[in-house]
Amino acid sequence: MIEAQNHIDGKWSTKGSVEIHSPSNTTEQIGTIPDAGESEIDAAVRAAKKSQTEWQRLGYAVRGNLLHQAASRLEANLDLLAEVATKEMGKPILETRGEAARAAAILRYYAGEGLHSVGDVIPAAKADTLQYTTREPLGTVGIVTPWNFPLAIPAWKLAPALVYGNTVVFKPAELSSLSAYVLIDLIADLFPSGTINLVLGKGAVAGEALIRHESVNAISFTGSTTVGHHIAEVAVGRGAKYQLEMGGKNPVIVADDANLTLAADMVVSGAMRSAGQKCTATSRVIVMDKIRSSFTDALVQRVKELSIGDPLDARNYLGPVASQAQQEKVENLINTGAKEGARLLVGGSRASNVSQYGYFVTPTVFDQVSIDATIAQEEIFGPVVGIIEAHSVEHAIALANNVRYGLSASIFTNSLDTAMEFVNGIQAGMVRVNEETAGVELQAPFGGIKASSSYSREQGRSAIEFYTHIKTVAIRPPKA
Ligand code: NAD
Image (cartoon, rainbow, N blue to C red):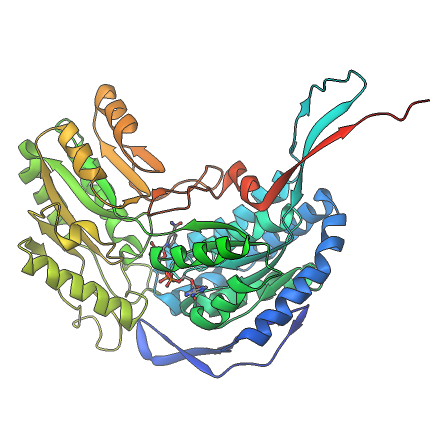
């Protein structure tokens, strides 16, 4: 049992009474979280604001060193982090272990990032003037995260925010608050009071108070497109900087000349790992008519063999989806898919044979999905993939682009020409060839276009664009 608390101004506050149960076994209570509101957010923002100047003055080297120490703490506790995350949101243990390691690697990456150059020397009209740019922190940053990457997403927002000299108030999703608490509990004492504040509460209450707080200079958000667009409106209304990473409807194109074994393996991994609950999950497979039948057979055979069950058992490929609401949403979309005429090839039901006390959904494949169908347009966020037929690569790219999202996209082909036609024509922020749609590396920019993003980027060097502003300086020596 984990009794999670808020962390405000260096102090842990009263435990909460909201019960958290495991999605793989709802009879097991795994912890409690507080239900914080406006007053806790206000206290956290005040603490962050008060400590920011001192934190900035410490300089990059000291801040980077603290991030290195934080990374070491995470590395020493990968099993703990993985177990809590798996119990809390149902992702299989090998995946959460990898995610915990990635969170540590992200802290290390940004620990070093603070030592890179941050500006340019620019020629000035007056020959004796030194003109240059530097980067300054934004001040207090509000961090709002989803539940599907309970460790990595907080890490890739917290680390750049901190290394560039901002202080933070972090509000994780209710479904990943225990993981957030354990993560912050492992590292908080390394940092000066007020630098990292954690507030646990509902999105509509604590989250809303955070995005509206006048002393929050910037908001970094990952979550659904609906909430993201609401945050954008609030932020614009009060002149705060914002960054949104939102939903996806990620396509894979399988060309005539593709290695079908590789394509089928990568579609299974992209669509079914984390029970499909990745913003970059493969959701549509657009297959050339000539090879549709052989690709479909290969895919269905693999999906039938997937083991679903207790996510703490490393032999299981899929655990449950994260909540009852997720399970109902995915089931409704599966039913809509069948009603709208798609052909169900495998899955399509609640996996009640696994456990009646968990939110398990059978991995599902639909064929003959029309491009206008709800399951071809809406983000499902579950272990469901739909096959759409195309008659040429050009047609496939047009179908792939015919959605409101544009996060990640892949093609499987052995032709460089086809690969380049895809790279140039696809509307997505992250484009991959002979790779699954998920899995962008931490040192590379991450983000989407269209309804998937505010067109900003996270990870790698691009994080500096959001977490700092440019200051242009011109210095003329005083006359002797
Ligand atoms: P969500 O939008 O429901 O919640 C995300 C966060 O916003 C939570 O912390 C929630 O408490 C908070 N929130 C909710 N209402 C709020 C409000 N009015 N004001 C401020 N904060 C509020 O999303 P979710 O269900 O937690 O996560 C799933 C979604 O996240 C999916 O759509 C998925 O595609 C997306 N996602 C995107 C990326 C990406 O990088 N593009 C990565 C992971 C997940």
